[in-house]
Amino acid sequence: MPNTRQPPLVRPVILSGGVGSRLWPLSRALYPKQLLPLVGERTMLQETLNRVADPALFAPPMVICNEEHRFIIAEQMRQNGTPAGTIVLEPEGRNTAPAAAIGALLALRDDDDALILILPSDHVIGDVTGFHAAVTTAKAAAQDGALVTFGMEPDQPETGYGYIRRGDPLPGIDGCYRVARFIEKPQAEAARAMLAEGGWLWNSGMFLFGARAYLEELERLQPGMAQQCRQAVAHGTVDLDFFRLDAAAFKQMPSNSIDYAVMERTTHAAVVPADIQWNDIGSWSALWQIGAKNADGNVTIGDIITEATRDSYIRSEGPLVAAIGVRDLLVVATEDAILVAAKDRSQDVKTVVERLKAAGRQQHHAHVRVVRPWGSYQSVDAGNRFQVKQLVVKPGAKLSLQKHRHRAEHWVVVSGTARVTRDAETFDLHVDESTYIPVGAAHRLENPGDEPLRVIEVQSGDYLGEDDIIRFDDVYGRVEEKEKK
Image (cartoon, rainbow, N blue to C red):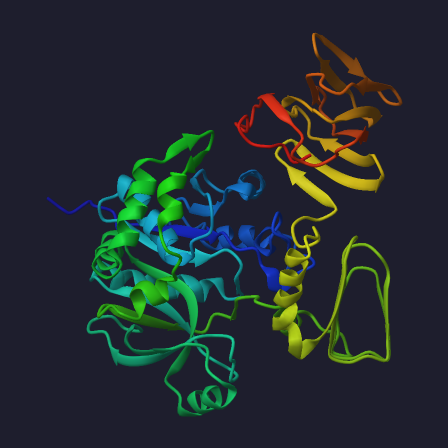
């Protein structure tokens, strides 16, 4: 009888755990760069999902993310029309080696011969057809037991990437080579020498291998990590549409990258060279490099006026930005922060984020507008014993049933219809109507209509911190969490 077994599909495992601190102030901990539309109308995560949407080559994707981003990611996948996959929640970041192991363990639950493609969620790939061709080549090598990385053809002596020395061709697989050597981020002189020598590739951080093959190497090289990953999956729980890893087991494992933990130590490493218009968008200067430039070499996004300005990246998410007589600058304006930096110092933006953290400031953590599963809120004003916010509640959505120990709230409906629960009573408010929520009252706000509900909330009290909440009921499974509203 003829063999009717279908060729195995590749299971994309998309890593979405980073915070993108080098792209501050647009990228924040609660809304990092992969969730933003930095290079087009779709977010970087959505673009990544679209690259692996071919059902002839790829199985439904798995996304591994920080649990704080789960509702945003689920909504972006829904908006994108992505087939239902698995969203895996990490309690803390532990780098790529454990994430790949988690992806491998979960993929093996569905397919004993699973092949997994590890993809960061924040890369740009201009040549999707070439990317699919590279994946097809890597797939053939992975079926023979190779652990494959994708090497990008370098076009400049970049010091921000690791390098891979291409070795001998892998027998029987055209376009795939053994890895002869890995070099971590080199100094400029060494990078220039490697570029002149040829045969060196940028290490892209994308990998394809058999799930079982990767786990076997991890168990040999990092047995403790492998065991903790197994425990985190075995004791994980289903939470709505998410798979929540066991926090106790996951937090015990060391943080390490796939390169350090496995690829630089295995004898099965292979590389597929690829020229696919790739960029990892690791800085604002990278966005200038790939952006559409005007006659003066400027990339401008938003409300921008330039005069005698050249070779700069200027972006505004709100206020008008005027630049006069400057060159090689990065200027990024949001509602609550402005970045001005020399283009060749773009990697140092991370230092500013660390200083904000150390000072206890919030501009590194959240934007003025904060997305929640029920909608969003935006700070309007704040002062001694008061705070004003605009709440936007999506149609059919509702906040948790909750109470506060230290603050009262006044709600004024600006548009839509609000259904209010206040202790034992439930009632509707319409445009220009308002109500008062006393300290300690159990309350809930919901939108019964089919249009967004907009409410101005005035908080008053001796403590207005985001952790002043007792939650009783929540449709998003957050009863044990602290509401950040």
